Length: 273
Ligand code: HPA
Image 1: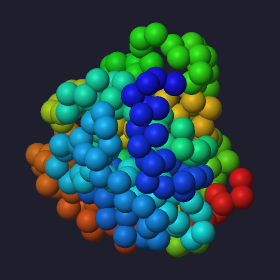
Image 2: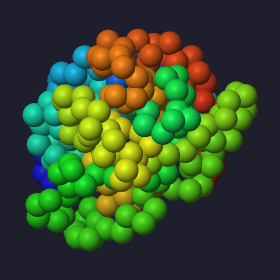
Image 3: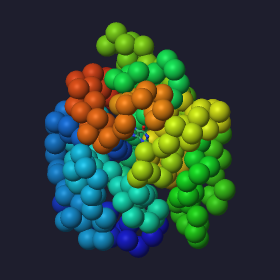
Image 4: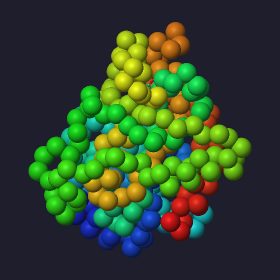
């Protein structure tokens, strides 16, 4: 594993010996989930030597380590995005740190634009596959064989059992969670209506600016990966309304109680798998 990742792990280990099972990464406007965690340790990114600091609106910058319903979790409150100017290596650092601390499940969340006509703002959607042909592959560069193989298989990036658990967790809260294909673009500009028509033609149900780099890194590291999107808006051109990050964050706030319940139930159901 690369030296800077090892340094981060060493620093965190100097503070806590907590071993997480699940690495949870929170998306735009969803950062309040941290309140659900019975916190054992709180580590601001700024305190970790060599760790990048998040600048996106709606994002805090810290790791929370603690228990969600008895399940040990490390939660990234404030994700790093490629559009902020970080290198892919920096974007992947948190996943590598989570893995190095012991997490074997990676639970990703995000805010996304809805492309499929059956998706509405406020819907939760399980990601069962992704398209990232327009982004930069995050594993470009020398391969660290300690991490994983040079050409990792991506047939099932999103673990079927974990997808099922998320769907069942939704049913426990009386909501039907649909599933979809997530298209990752780099951002930071939102898409044009023509780009969204292209995404739809290529098979995308959702669009967003995150998640896929971490999911690829998680698979590369041999983690079991799952992801859930909160549809915060209809994608460009599907509704005539202009898009804004305020709208994305506001929907995050509105959907927070439901999102919190579903994620918490899903995590509790992942305890023994
Ligand atoms: N496009 C890209 N990213 C997003 C969107 C969108 O419409 N909504 C939330 N994140």
